Image (cartoon, rainbow, N blue to C red; front, side, top):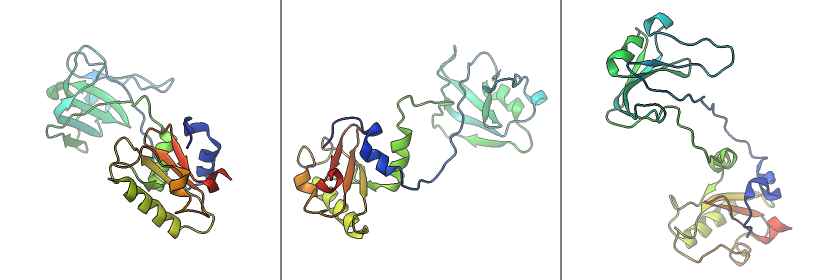
Length: 214
């Protein structure tokens, strides 16, 4: 078991050979809400200020019907938000933002749900988050006990080619019934020939077997 952050570990570098699905990551802009609908500056250099509703062209999408929390600015909540070219172009009251609506604009009714425009999660582990999509899930969301986690890992080992790495993620003994940690003594009997790497849900602890350390 390793207690260092696995982000720079040699074992994690072995994981990077996995083929991962690629997904576009949208750019985020933060709206400063003033009176009416507030136009925003595009973040790329040398791009013009987007001004005026209809004069600047219709929005592709308008959201309303639920709390919209711009976070920054004097207004903690607004009624509507307009997006064009992947950018937030206006926020404010519904009547003002509606001036951005055109014949091809998609209007999304939030139906009471909360929208966080331009929300940025400041502690995102983007690499390990992507890797988790192609690894065995033994997190508390899908695994209720230590024994179930070992059963999943053994099944993955049995299905793997001889000597191939078996990667799992999300194990958390504070949320899963069983012993306080997974040990080599637990992993070696179920995987004597395949290296096993299990990332703790915190992403700061990893559990491995003897083959992984060889």
